[in-house]
Image 1 (cartoon, rainbow, N blue to C red):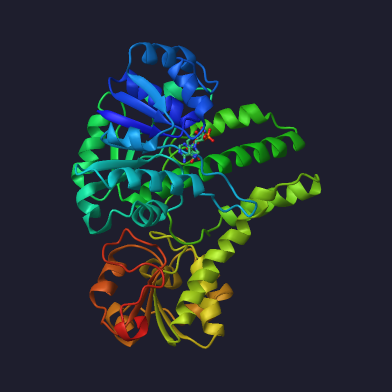
Image 2: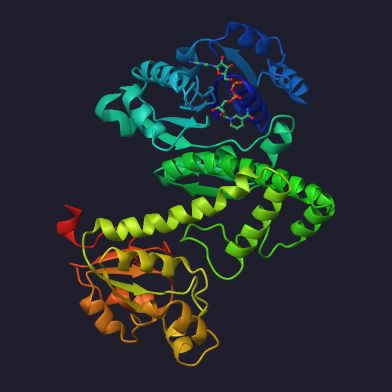
Length: 438
Ligand SMILES: NC(=O)c1ccc[n+]([C@@H]2O[C@H](COP(=O)([O-])OP(=O)(O)OC[C@H]3O[C@@H](n4cnc5c(N)ncnc54)[C@H](O)[C@@H]3O)[C@@H](O)[C@H]2O)c1
């Protein structure tokens, strides 16, 4: 393919050189004439292991060249990859001015063309940026859809190992609205040994931020655990090595899907104990200390969603801190129900495990002694609970949640704290009642 790469910084240079190596004809574009001159001289404008040799080889073989003319580049290519910088402003907001300028340059060049031109955003941009900026900036009018194909293709490379990362990314991620564009990108990367993942444009934009936020979180988590181990005289490397061995719960998909707050007899208690021990040793743990507050925030969010409906009759399906257990200790659902009762809601609760426990199980004493006010709200007739409720709160997944939904009337509001994947459950705060939505 004939490709233009806008922005010859780290990402652009590596992308341009590696695509040239893969057999494409690549034109790099930059507003900085020194960078384009260096490329045309066979030199890399950025320092990156292996890149100088690769640029030199690709330029010699006439597979890579550079220009400051966006117009020339667009007219001689069929696809543009935008790799310009998106730096932070003083308030943290991303500066998209370079991206806007590129889009305008491409738009002007496209005014004369008639073929479909593919524009791929590789720069890191917040969800919604690509569609908003490109639609506004290209100004190709009503013919937009016939003239332009859009995609977002985030880069997962790390400086220092970027050529190897380009060849072996964790995935080739392409966000686009149509299969023809996805197929074009699939062809472009056919030599890359990685799963090809197609998403919406916004999901692809978001994915890069989510990944980087998670990486930052992991680094801070590991450092705080290291500090804590050190203060307790525990070998931090031995702990980390052992921690990493657990691929079932630690380094895994577990606990990484959005849902409701955590609770139960272990997580809150053990986190409190660690934070207390750290305080006693004067070890600062800003990240770990923020976890209880974040968890409280999720409970508050659930309560606010119910109160915002201004309806008083609330049916709760699932009370334990997760499905399949009768353990109510530190269940966030108990906290939610207690607040709702305090706010004057008439709450009814269905949780078959808890109901059974209140009659015979080991948790009977806890239920009778600690939460008798909640125990008295329990029922075991789903049909009457759904029939009498104006708001139905789904606290855990399972058969009852699915049935509760099936029985719902259009005038009832559903608040699904589990956020799925129980099919057809509305997300948090989503309202079934059209009147309330309006
Ligand atoms: N550096 C990384 O490791 C990395 C990794 C993944 C994603 N990203 C993202 O990729 C994007 C680029 O990052 P980078 O580190 O390569 O940036 P960079 O600052 O090194 O390079 C940006 C280049 O764009 C050029 N440019 C600016 N305006 C232009 C215009 N109108 N037309 C043509 N060129 C123009 C600049 O002269 C510069 O050479 C950013 O959004 C960044 O967040 C970076």
